[in-house]
Length: 248
Image (cartoon, rainbow, N blue to C red):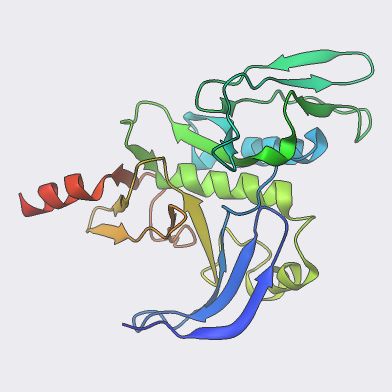
């Protein structure tokens, strides 16, 4: 099955970075815009990150037994989360934000008196790290997430970044994606797999669906498909392990 790429590539400098329209496989002829989250998501101002916190609170039903984290990912081997510190600073206060060994942290939900009241401060240049939201329901195995967890991650991303995307992409989303790329089949949203993972499956009551990883360790899930329950399990594994299970 071949994929025919259309001759247009749009480059953004925000979380939703690399887009290209392409005709899908024989089974699905929907033209889609693919969204890569790997090459440009940056740590934003607290006022923008706050929009993600609010989106998480408003759509918490997607993952009611979860918490919202963010993860800082080094852009290069020279960047390292070890020794990295963060604080929320204002004219009157300084709040330390603990960062664990994996680069994961949480932000408090603060009602702002003015948009630039607080600034996120790192002890290293912000440009050294990517950032992504991380949602995972409690009581799940280390190698699993719910589909609802990833749907909520997408909503958090969009809330933070939608005001900064290009006019072209914003217009596309408004006209052809019902105003939200996380709920439209015309947009393929890439998710970043955990380190060391090269096989992703989605378990439904009827079948187990497999998804390919790209060179940037990303995969695409049909988060728009309302026929798929939020409780469907997304599982991560090394391909060697996945092949052994399949043979058995």
